[in-house]
Image (tube, rainbow, N blue to C red; front, side, top):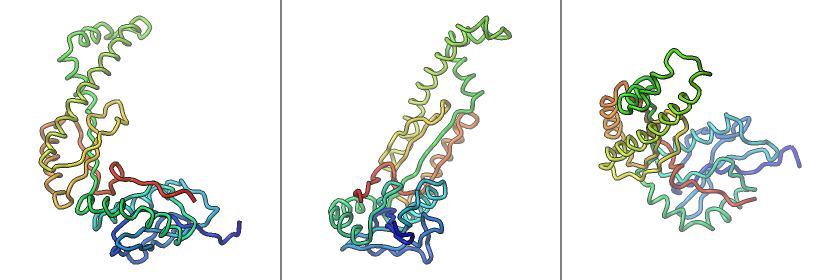
Length: 253
């Protein structure tokens, strides 16, 4: 393959009137300058990439997300999965935009004025453990049984206590996730419950809400954080592109 052969990296689909920020860059080393390919009312955010350059570095992932998330704050964005590469701009227009025009237009209409936020809460270890021991007499008994004794002498009790704690945390997680979702009902969000990524996760959800209500969303979570002070540490990420709701794949080259 020629050293200067290039392909086109596609980040996502946007309305045709979107213009990239001047000198915006994306994946690649050096980073490719971002431009658009248009077809009717829709367009694709793209940059060129050397054909033989492998993808997947942390810098690539960051560039992909930053471009999409930054775009999502000013216009609806239909994100493509990381690594969406096509042969040239003609393929982007014909095989991607034209072939999926109706679907893309409908998806962008659904996303108009909205963006994704991720709400993540993690239990404070000592606080949740004490809460579980206070509520579960068998767990408290097992805790006393193993106190100040060797691991070998209390192996079965430790295993039983670990199982009780894991089951209790799963129940707490389900209950606390329902509480958060209930608090968000006023935003009429789309909600995607994510799998916990840590054994002490209290809540891990993605929501699609109106960007204009971001301050209200932040205040709702601030109040919930105060209610759970010392028990759950809550974090809000976003706004970002709607990865959990509408991420698409590009056609194969």
